[in-house]
Length: 121
Image (cartoon, rainbow, N blue to C red):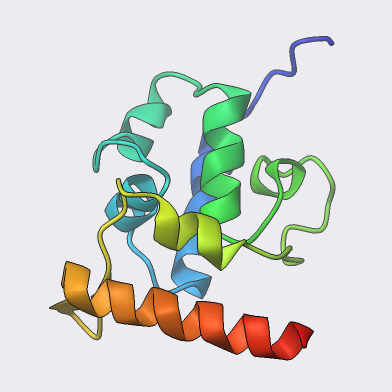
């Protein structure tokens, strides 16, 4: 596979756009993707790996191609597997600015699990 040169300015612009659309800051996006809070800001000077960008794209509900602006349809979104996001122990969650405790997260996991188990029956 050939290396694709990315425009870091375009990349950051797209990440900001998708983050805003999802109500997230760049630091929150980075944390949800398993990166340091300041990682995305450092991309002004260096280009992250495709794997890292795929993780960020998943957090933002989009694809790698849309995130890097290579398909011309940066507004479209794809599904994010909420189970993967919730089960990732690196992620910290808040609701309306209030931290979600591990006990509350356990309840949320159980509600989702029950809801989707019932749906399959």
